Length: 459
Length: 105
Image (tube, rainbow over all chains, first blue to last red; front, top):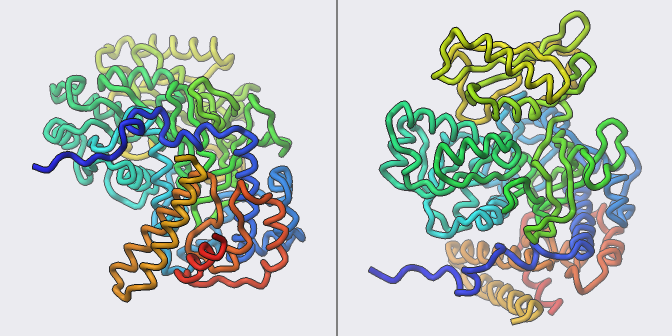
């Protein structure tokens, strides 16, 4: 048998960072690079995108007007998912959003569509390589190395998230094992048989698989899995309770990447496991107060406004993510890339005001995840009653809780939420397996409010 | 090897890839070399050298751009701003990409 491939020199193999130069670049140099890239990007979209040219011309904006990062934030119009969905519906598949000849689109993916119509995302071949690279920073920091085997607990549909992860696995040089077509028990059997080192899944699906393994009598903690890596919904670096649950269930270290399917897999996990870093080689991002439209200061919660340099077939500039983040400039891990402490803290559109108190989905999720007796299967139901928004927490008790104890458990959960969030929510236990299961993004919010009372967003 | 030396090697490599690309009429080899050039462009990007958003844009794009460290970005943008409206989407041309690089060097 030939000797193993030598991927790296000895010094590179022991490197702390995937790219020490870019990941630790001083802020002034990062900003100079950003300005240079933003100028080029504005030139590019004005030349090639009918959508952006129209948008710019409508307000008299020319590329030469962008002379600073502040100009870019202030002058380039905000974009939103709905803009692009509308254009794609008018002229499928991509409408006026395409900036490359169609023959250069080599991979078609879509957003999950879990909260509305899916947005079509065209990749050029180069884009697939670059979005894959975004995953590798987090893989490397997490301890994943070339040659490690990754098990993809997904079906291979058009969802952008796991395709980009697949591109990342290829760029890193990992062995890809597809779980496509298997049911939950099949995934467990595959993992025990094929002995991958890393599980790739949504975080809630990792918990579901662990539960299925327990029901099968399979020793998943003693399996070959050493790392789990997640995206697609609030994960271990956003929800400490979830980190603990996944780590304990799998006997492994869980990791997380924050991505936006139509933008980039743009924020690899921090080695400190309490947030993610913005990949400032591939995207430019800043925070905005969604109420005032003004830039939020470092450390304050604001909406992540993001621009991708690397999705060249359908660039999104100053794109409203509707993710509320707390941006910090320094991190003990050594990366100079800005960090989202706690990943995504909430959604501008999933914030509801209940009895005068702003309630964010993730805040409730954090409390439920840490509560003994509450299983990972729960949902938040929104109604509008007597002129007010109302949120009901529906949860499945753990299997070992007798039915007679469910009302008392629900009361305790309600009191805990009241104590922590200063709001009283209705809490209702649901029989085990009474709530739906999801392979991809788990739908936590069931919004029964009249359409006109919801925010004008589809996510 | 210093960063500047590494960058110079990568520029050399792109020039060689271009020469090889132009020197063959085998579609397979041309496609392989195109991927090689993309990777070299990506390596330069990740060393902070951003000459273009893509390696396969027309030459006008390349002439306007400058390495991030060598020329002030604002000046580079100003130089090219006036020409923007006239440009139209075009198919990638290998000749343009590498020729632009060779001239700069």
